[in-house]
Image (cartoon, rainbow, N blue to C red; front, side, top):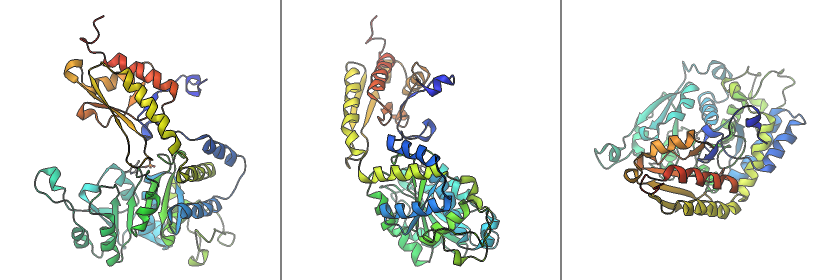
Length: 405
Ligand SMILES: *Cc1c(COP(=O)(O)O)cnc(C)c1O
């Protein structure tokens, strides 16, 4: 039984993990149940976002939070909140920022395709620093003083893309920003696990942090968390929520929006195009509880066993297999398959393409191809899929000399 087959499509074997292009993470049964149950009754979205704010605060230590339609949506909303604060006129004008500060300082080495979301809100990015070890021109990366030197009257905030290896450390950038009275917006979309990052990143003093709900948390793919300062989360929620009501009747939950701060009800804001549904909110909150409780850790041992079984099937072929385990005992293990391209007479790219085009279609992780590696992430791999996947790998990885038939 397959919905996709019924509709004339072929489902794939996803050996790449929770990547967006292939549909995100598998939702656990409790998350799917929450999605369906939420669909059967109605509740006002602002009330649900108030609930979300309390739940997110519990797990992150943030003052407030809201559910967004992804981490990238959180970046757009967080940027909008920093640009406008509670100013209804500014909310109305975005992405036009004429007349108020609109620059976000970012390290050149933090620039990436997702910063389109920050620019889409109306912000202009001001780049600082170099990554001279990468260009081969020196030893230093971007430094905190360079952020300070770039801040001026047009600066609205600082945008920081977080990884454990990000430089300079977030704490130093927050110190510079707060010295200047500026907020820091952090993209931490894929920085879970470790679970401790739910708290540790905010604990640096960062003002707003975005996480994906559809990656390690395993909520619906188009969900995310935006958490941090209450006034900023409030301004973000104001610009996402549907505003078709009378001011006199409007009764938003106080933990999210303090109505007394406003003289009227704004029209739909720049984030109205990024709306989330009641089903998405309840499903991702359920997933967040599971993730934060460590419920997913018990699967690691099964994933490891499946990867080992696949590695065993590849023994004797012109490849090297390495099981890569995480140090935090929370992240999934992966199988790194390094190809002997000469013995195989084929490139890793060629084999990756054949796997995608074969039957069943298999998508392995493609981030090691330039180092002749295929990467297997087991998140979506069931026992049955593991056998099919191993068979397809063996078919593709038999070199002419290792297969004399
Ligand atoms: C995945 C990712 C995003 C986008 O997250 P969505 O939840 O898919 O919107 C943004 N930034 C980084 C660094 C990511 O890895």
